[in-house]
Length: 110
Image (cartoon, one colour):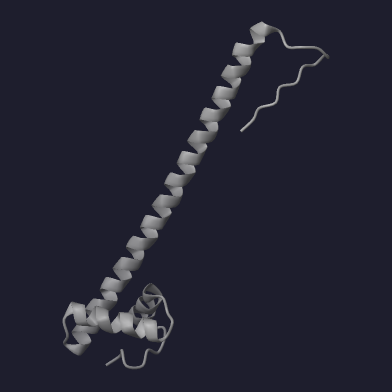
């Protein structure tokens, strides 16, 4: 990055002002780095929460399907994943629809 300093009157800066200008540039740099770190942390938290929410939905759908079909959880997951792939759906979206009964899912309801 760069920091431009302008003097109110034409002419060179006073050499004693150089350390002050450097300190100003350092503070600006630290502020920008802290803001970037805070933003990355927020984005990471949102991504992790979304992944956790999706995982919970998938686990619920697996349990529901396993109970209805009398199959184990691994078979339920394989069935859900296969259905999602065959219908070009995100697994979490399919799980939500299956849990809510908000969408007809032929072959998954019993």
